[in-house]
Length: 161
Image 1 (spheres, rainbow, N blue to C red):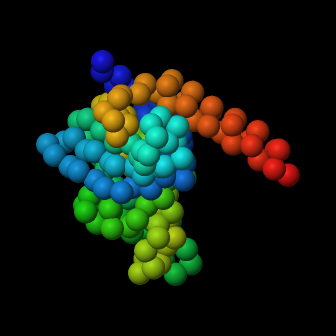
Image 2 (cartoon, helix red, strand yellow):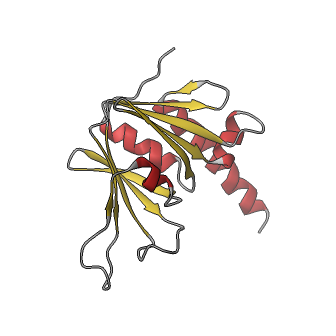
C-alpha cells in the first residue's frame, strides 16, 4: 500500500519526528532523492534491531544546504551537490515550511566548516517513509509512533528521578 505524503507541512513534520536522527546516506536519481536517516530509538519502536528509515522524495525541484552565518561569514555557504551535503554529517533537529519549501534545521559535525549548522531546503512533490523491513508509514503513523515513544520515555524518566 502506497502511503505517500503530499502536503508540504506533513513532509516537514517527517523531519521534526526524526529529531536527533542523522543523514547516513543520500541517493539521487532522475529527480528523485532518498535519504537514509539513522534514528535508532524510533526505528527500534517499529522493529527490534532496526536503526533507521528511508525517506524517498519524489520529483525534486530543490535540494540544497545553506549554512548559518556568523560574524566571520558574511554570506552563507550554499551546497547543492548531494555528495557534499552527505559529507556534512547532518544531525536533524526539526522541520518547518518557509516560502513553500521544506526547511530542515540541522547541525553539522564537520570541523572544517566555520558554521555549526544550517538549513536543508527541500522542494518535492511527495515523500514516502519506509522502515528497514520495507513497511511504509503514513504521517499519522509516524506521529503516533513518535508520540508513544516520547510518552513512554517521559514516564520512565519520571520514575527514575
